Length: 358
Image (tube, rainbow, N blue to C red; front, side):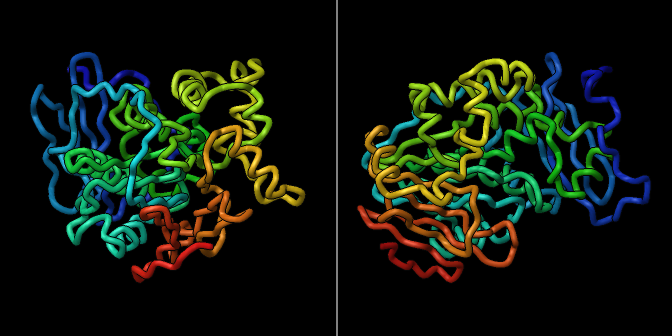
């Protein structure tokens, strides 16, 4: 019986060494769509397991395989069409964090400290919104746990009339486009065991791949614009709405060959260092409060919230017109989240303290 497309049976681009796999090694699950079959693969105790799921059947894993996978939140019939709604108003409380880079435990501690999730890791934020500003991928070794956590919280938040927004960062795009410079060595072991290249684990015919490809680059909540890197004047001069930028990434950039992206003037800008997932211009010498004000006037909003450029803490720039919230969680030592509640802005510490942002 054929379980996987031929592309999934080839050797990984960067195979791990052939040394024995540690018996404590776990990873997954990864879910693949093949014709009329759904195939799940995961590693437990250093051994690869495969299961073919029948319609309506839930994947059941042994304890310890995944800290956050919840089979009740997986809908194998869901095509993950990009959600058309990217603008939200009347949100009274909001938490946001960015550039988690595989630091699952630190993410859990931050969200628990501020009551976004409970002790069991389930949604406890009611009608609040949680924004993850991209760069879940790379560097750390718990990327898949974070992905399944975000996925679970999305479903639970919707049931509570809340919302989770997972935005594309440059590292999400890099991984989907097979730029694997920063992939943790753990996942080299996974590709060796599964004999599936890492980018194919997140390809268009996988559950993760379809889910991530449905994610936007930017959303607006109340009078705030959220985007991983930032919105430059060059990018905005394309005359594209945020919805059109999202569509360009989802429908073209993510799976288009790079030479075709670079041949299209608009796509080339969106994909470049002045595009929304790479831009760092707000931190460059010469960027002014007036420029920030002009960008926001163009967008019709009062604040931009960004990640991508790390610092020791969440910061308000240019009179808090721009909030930079990459607090170096990627280092695995400390971190903060951005907190909004009824018109006021705060830094949220790992201890649960909220420090007002001026």
